[in-house]
Amino acid sequence: MPRPRSPEPPFCPAEPEVTAADKVASVGRAVRREVNALGDGLERALSRAGELEVMIHNEVTALERTYSDNESRMRALIAELASQRKACSPIPSACEAITESHTGPVFDLDMISQRISGTIVESGGNLT
Image 1 (cartoon, helix red, strand yellow):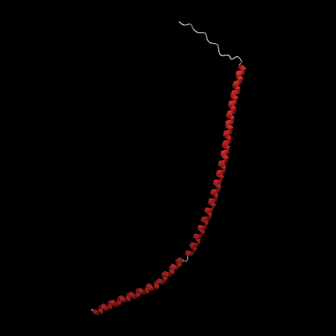
Image 2 (cartoon, one colour):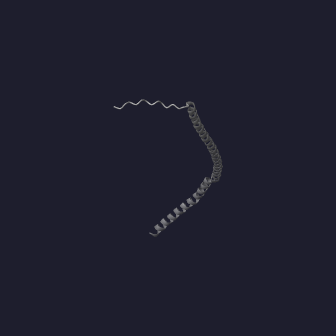
Image 3 (cartoon, rainbow, N blue to C red):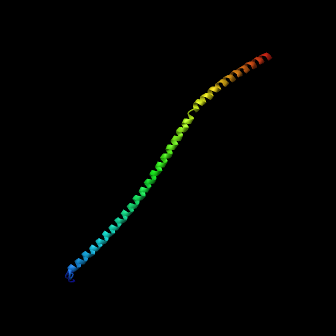
């Protein structure tokens, strides 16, 4: 049976303070790089947010202007419709006047047609 090996002694650096200082410095540099990257990212995000704010402000201004223009157009159309309604308001009375003026001639034509019918009936009776 093979002989058990004796355990190896743990690794012990010659100068642990120097190694620890190097590791701490390395971690510090990595943290600084990450913090700088975060700062750059935040600056870019803030810059983009400022650009977006300007774009939104411009769009809102354009929408307000368009709304105002459309509101003016609508008011003008409503005013025009109102004036056309006023212009058309005498038309019903004109229609009544035309209807009344037709009543007389229609009555006269009815009387004449009755006379003609009566005359034709009499003439037919005279012929027989």
